[in-house]
Amino acid sequence: MKGQNYQMSMEVALEAVNEVNPQEFYMKAMLENRSSSLFRQVLNLKEKTKIGNVGFEDPVLPFGCTWEGTNSNLGAKEMETEKLMIQTEICLSDIESSFIAQWMTPGTEGVDLPSQFRQHFFEELARAVSNSLEYMTWRGDKSLDPVTYGSLSCIDGLEKQLTLAAIPPAQKLSGAAPTVSTIIATLNSMYNKIPESYDDKSEEVLWFIPSGWAKLYKQAVAAASAEAYYTKNVPLDFLGIKLEVAKGMSANKSTISRKVNYIMLADLLSDQQNLKVIDQSNTTAVYTMRVTSTFKYGVNYLNDEEWVTFGIA
Picture 1 (cartoon, rainbow, N blue to C red):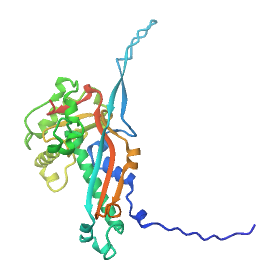
Picture 2 (cartoon, helix red, strand yellow):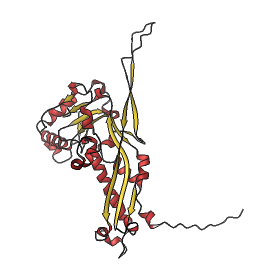
Picture 3 (cartoon, rainbow, N blue to C red):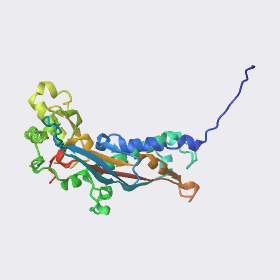
């Protein structure tokens, strides 16, 4: 059988080279560098779902010939996402006169946007969306005025939701804002209320603190061991549990629970199909580029009795 040689070629349109990758954009916006990236993630959620949890009474009994089985408790909590949207716009003439002008063909606007700029633009937009979602995760409250509070009014965050949870009163702590001299005592007060069932599950525990507490903790540890820590970074862990800094958390609040009890809800699969980049110069003769998208996002929690909170009444 004789071999044959084939020559193949492929042309790639300029707009294809410059187009944003929707999957990459949403992965950065939804799952990177945020508190909820550490949560239990329920994805591909269109509207509502029920998440089950099961608990047992002590299942070990003395041996006997009669059935005396203990109860198991199977429950399910309904959760849902909120439908949100992204809308932003940039003037193409501003792009041409900016620091990336050298990448553009002289005298052109619109479709000749450089791929370097589009990549930079969407990286910054993903970072901005991620930042908004971080604050919404903790401080969101749908009763807030959207004109005044913007994206914080889009969802109910964990701080609001946990005020309604049936957390054992002894595990709902409050007090004055900690200082360098009191931050260790504040963390100790929370640590002492962690349920005994967590004793062999420290690797499953998520302890979130606000960024201000992290600074106080580092200063307190450095003051106690100046030789070791004034010249290097203090590890953020407390008695074997890593302290996770939640930038969006309110200043005098903190939460402890197992990772499975922190729930992030999203529909990342179909969200990617909704991201649109519109060059207005080709449609309305207005030299702007618009980005629009819809997506779903929400947070929730499970197992009220497994939470320890500070400052969440």
